[in-house]
Amino acid sequence: MNEQKQLIEYMIQDVVDMLATDQNIEYDEAMNKFYNSEVFEKLQDEETGLYLESSGYVYDLFKDELNFGHIIQAEI
Image (cartoon, rainbow, N blue to C red; front, side, top):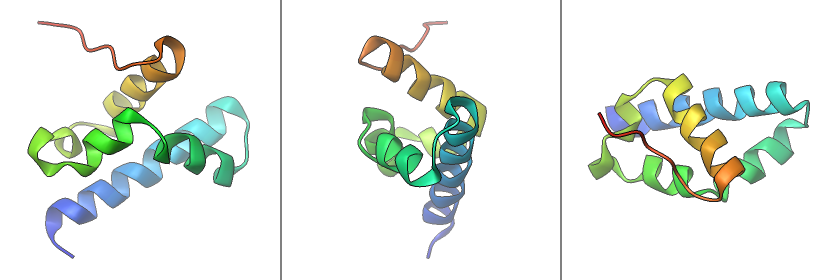
């Protein structure tokens, strides 16, 4: 497993943990929600570089997707 794939796996674990804790749901349900998201797809694509961001940042993107139906990314 290359370094990028390993970072992605750690990120997935972190985000699913945060989701399960925040929403007080089972880990399996949290995994299902995240695995079926646009954020998960973008995280899997190494070209986006999303795996280089913090787990908190990725989780915030995911929460936006849950709340608004799509990713909201503020322009700087």
